[in-house]
Length: 427
Image (cartoon, rainbow, N blue to C red; front, side, top):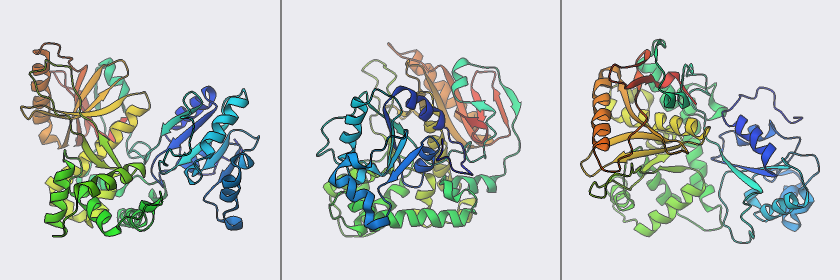
């Protein structure tokens, strides 16, 4: 492709992009700002138009507003960057795909979900959505990739040395963040970029749909989400947390609900839904999702925490480390059609992460920081596995796995539970 950029770092999503361009007339890469969507799109396109280009007083955007077909060229695949700036482009692309019997005509990218007002057609069958996120440890070159997540469903024998993992280095790579532009920066400089990301979002991005919102209230909500990173917390609890920790001024449930919706549309937050293993109805299974900021570094930056503070606060660091692991597990699972969940039942038994395949098979993961916690994680998984197998209609997991931060071996225990360092995992 003629637009390929020198120095492009391969991404896990590249293979999916290539495949989708062979099947669909257009693809839509969606995800947070700065995660690398534009560079990945350049890597598979022959022409491009950027609607955020200020040249000629935003000429590209003004042309698209007058008539979207004016910016659609005949040198496919064509990148249309930040298409949500002119939502009518969606229907123009869909119409062109219907009119031209070819595949791989357009690649759309966007960092916000626009209102559907004015968009006539959903694009089903013509425009294929692909999610993209910040870098995983494997994409950052910080996981040796010796263990494939997908391969665990084949129940492989496993016993290998994976190398030493230093605690202070683990803290640094966890809080560093997965922004492609910061990969060569030190951890403190990278956190400064994450802080700038939040500042930009609060000062301008939250009004992307033309609705005026309070930057102060949004900042308070983001700080509350950061305090509750990787936990199951209700919107009403967030309201209470904001009042108790940031201000005595009340913030309404409706405001929190609206602002959360905005953060979701900006790909700043995501929900890890609850999983139901189809046990009998007498077993209560929680339905509330875990809440995550889109990258672990954002929670650290929002609270103004330094990496050094985590060296002695293992409890707080544990939540950020779990967030990193679940961030990577979800992205790895996405590459083969898997989905990430969590589990919590009425007896308080929990599974940190569940990866479910399209065929319904699933694997259960406990996330532990230290090797001294592996035994406890394995016991928890085995207890829940027995409980599910003993229930009517229970759908047991294919495998059990403890993902660990500070272990230098990947192996299968005599009881069948896998132990895998996060620094050795890949898709």
